[in-house]
Length: 221
Figure 1 (cartoon, rainbow, N blue to C red):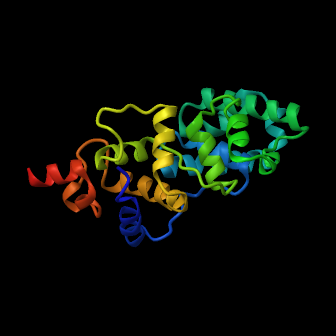
Figure 2: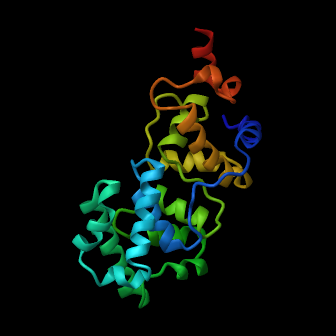
């Protein structure tokens, strides 16, 4: 089902080049960045992340302040109370586990060990864990966010009617060649924002419509 993966990756590479999503090289910073980005427009979560870093430049400070002090800084990004509690809890757990607020010890773990540890942290599921592994740990994994799942579903790389869960996320990751995973993830996010939107996708203008089962039907209609 993933036979067109390399072709789709090549076409999207020509469309978007080698863009980034602003992800961070430091794994703890990347974790915070991803938590703030969920269900939030890019400009808003990037602004919120910068505000948090300016107010608390040292990660260890996040383990010492109250969640409400964090919430005041990130309120513009939405879900401030929930996210502040997650960030505070994570910072405290890392401080207790490693002696400081850091995820750098993950660099000494293999892919599965790092993913398993990350998923023990509050608010961290397989998608968030793989984003950290991909962007900050430079592992060849494929995070399946809402954009990626929508696109692989419409293209026809997974069975019709599948719902996103850890098993399906593993199937998608396994189906995509490891050397394509980083840039295909980034370009799927960009494609999902610009063309393959949740409702009223712009199939007639989509650069990969000829490889998409759903798109070909919509264009024919």
